[in-house]
Length: 334
Ligand code: GLN
Image (cartoon, rainbow, N blue to C red; front, top):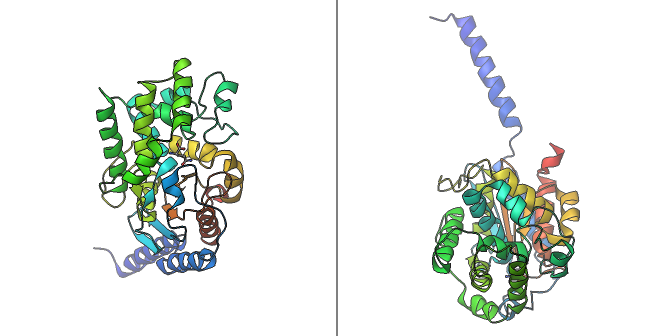
């Protein structure tokens, strides 16, 4: 039996450690408050324009604005139109790259596709030519179409089924195809077809280039909300385990690799400024979604269709920058 002095001493130690550990945690009230402030601050910001080069994106409601934050324990904080869906577009590139990394390894992605910034627009053809036929990274169109082509499958039907299942597991629900966006984009993706043919000429493709482009276009046309993006991001933040469903989607050895590419190329030719301002790995899509990750802690998903000249959502960037600053989440500052 412990004497009373020892008991008191042990209790003090327990209280001390509990307090010290919790001292670094941000309270739920504070997170709600900061999300609310971000929403109020930027809701009326009408900067930017919907993507026009895909007709179905030009007609999406530009006022949609939703912010969701999911922590590593699956707690959800959200405000605004967080269940309104837009097409995932380039944010999908993250999850298919994760799938190919799982199947073929991190070295394969580095050697075959590349993990460096292009310094050029997301749909640049010149960047491929200037780099000896390399797409440079899986988050520009060239690298993403190439990534899709390397998903192991007997045909494009199976390839699509695997990509859909993978993204749905990241999101923790069965994602649906936005048929309007798909139809609009699949009839107007000659540039991406040209990119895929060029890469094929450089012997970089894993399957038929035009088929891979069609599967890639489908993956870009999946509907997601700010809520979905935050859960998907939180899964990477939580070392590959979806914190809501508790299902492992990706090995923890690959999450730092995926986040490294997000830092290098997630916001295309503006990735440097983004990293400088926020320090968080992120990925944008021309549908208006951005997912940002605070490693080991949070996924943040924001949807707002109007884009800047780089193809990144204006309000999503503003909201994430604000949240990261107010909650002190810049991982490079820790
Ligand atoms: N599907 C779009 C395209 O191929 C994706 C681009 C993006 O979101 N940046 O052009």
